[in-house]
Length: 312
Length: 292
Image (cartoon, chains in turn yellow, green):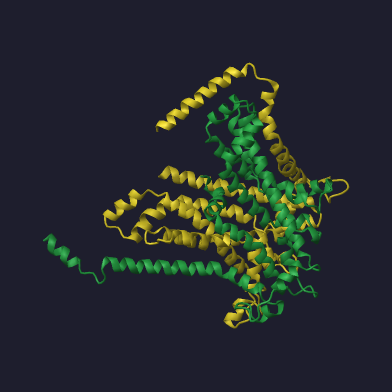
């Protein structure tokens, strides 16, 4: 407490000395802060914001990468929304999101509760082991899973003694993607939930223990309700990330460097396909539709979280 | 009355400490089981990398019947030239990491420690763009690199990845917590702002710079979408783009031994660093989600 007050008075004196210097500020003094942000801003404008705005303009044009660009109005958007492949890939993406987020979050939370338990002494042994799949690159892990799920030569069919076409049957292949996402993602959310659990006030739990609550009662009546907004936040953040899913389904379902078949493709494949086909306007339009969906999900999240906060 | 009730209740089948013991063993069993499941794919990855391409078809899950390094020899042989792709990945990841940490730290220093016209506006505008997904600008970016004649070049892999706003944000937050007195006293001693940045801020901010560096290195190492669009020349594709496309002469059958050796080489060095710095890794890789 004392140190805080001390610091405050320090920064006050600095502000005073700053205002004193203000009159005599040289050009060098004036320019210094701008010079420090200039390199970052320059790269940001040229390679991020510029291309983003350019993509926005492009989405209203028909442009094949050479020659004259033709103004197309909202044609690109209409064509994208009219194209049945768009809806298939969007449905796949939503399937991947809900399909993997629910079991992944549940398992991650379950593991976090277990590791957080007072009975577990070796927390620092289990934590990195559970987190480990997150360290493996998504492409590398997708390849291991492709090998594992192989129809004639995969480890799974080998153990079961079957010839199930895990990756050739599209319904099964989508579940294989889900399993990969769950396996790889648990560690991440496990660490997040563990941090959330350790931040819950000990006194609440102790009071409940004194009142005779069992561990399960404490879990269901105290911990889970307190973590509810964390769950929702996690689910939404994970959804925004999953909308941009690309590597996992394409490596798992692709053959010889080709993208995954439409039946299991994520939305981003449309952007890539359009660029490869030099339909830059269409690619840009799909990108912006994706952005609108992201914004929509984020707004819904804030509305729900805001209402929750009011209720509490 | 109360006493008799107590004595009636206190006849449990198992004593409290035995129950505790059972619960503990159960939890440890479940956790161990989960650890085995999370390790299993990595174990078969490493085991398969020591089998020949042929043996994997017959024996995809067990220990190698015949341990061989032939898959690793493939990686370093001249006809696959895969070591070159490793080199590309390495160079891109290192340059991207150093470059973005440097640029972000410079800008963060200015946003945290200077007062200047437009500061809050620029910073707020930058934060707002965090909503825009990187993937959205790919068509525009592709045409920009075509215009610059940089398609199929290593700079195309580095330049767009140098300015993630999350890094700027994290480093600025950290710098805000550093007392201004440190800077003021260096000023009085006659240090210029560059010296203050390089000699004081960078060393003091080492923890957050390191955390952001881990984040950036992993992101660059794992990147798949943009490199697969912009680099079509196989010699300079990052290793993650090449590995899924490795097939035998027929072009249909994947050479699983070589692929697993490639995966192992791409994973094990990072894993060793992770084991050494596990806490830093876990906190820096999850830092993006704990903003709230």
